[in-house]
Length: 180
Image (spheres, rainbow, N blue to C red):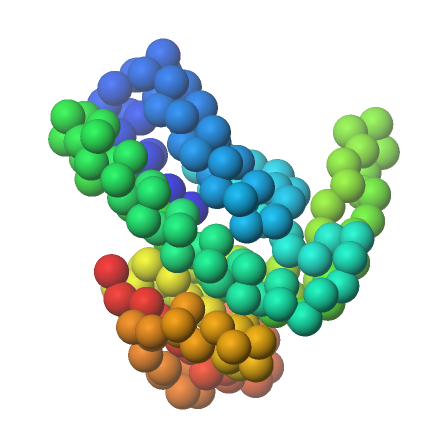
């Protein structure tokens, strides 16, 4: 999610907003491709990204975490370049690791998308970045998977918050946060 874009687009108008969102989409596409992910869809100023679609590798969570960290850095650099717009832009990422169902949904407006609890939790984690002043919120499944494949370096700087209620879920989860 690109935090600050709604306020910015209100002030700069539709033409400049479209120009900025296209730059942002291009940046996201580049970073996701570098890390082996697939963009499921862009949703306004956010993107749903999937790793491991069509192939199962044990290091997909590490790839997702590396991608998230790169996105935060590159979007931060890009945002500083366009900071003449006077609204600070920043990225926020929610990460969860687990099975998803790839399904064709809809009737005349058919779309193929990833769905399931893993997708829902990732979305809720992204929302929790705002509450906790973080740029990345990840589940224990992501953190443990990255460590299991020897990528503890990707976890540096994260702090854990145990037993966090996740909207719509019965059981609380440990939340891993990378502060803003």
